[in-house]
Image 1 (tube, rainbow, N blue to C red):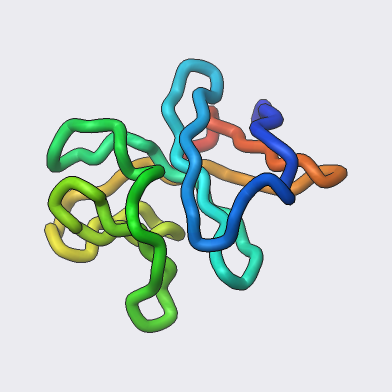
Image 2: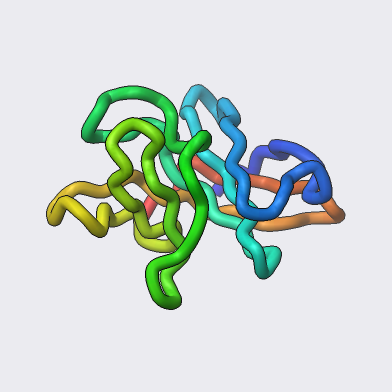
Length: 110
């Protein structure tokens, strides 16, 4: 698995997303309220627009989600599954903090 540095951890604001191009793949990166990190594909499969990084971050119960800014479908940040449209999902990428830097690996999608 190849890890790519995206940004310093402290540059990510809680409950906000950022877009990053990692090895040619558009990734939406999120730092949630508890400090955890999630990386998913930035492309909204319903609208076809690369906008998930600009979505509203929150939760449904214990599940961290992002709501698409286009049509408001919620995507589980841990599995990529769309909670409003069964059978639709976005890719999920491994993400970690290494020496204060956020790293993402796009070769190991789930």
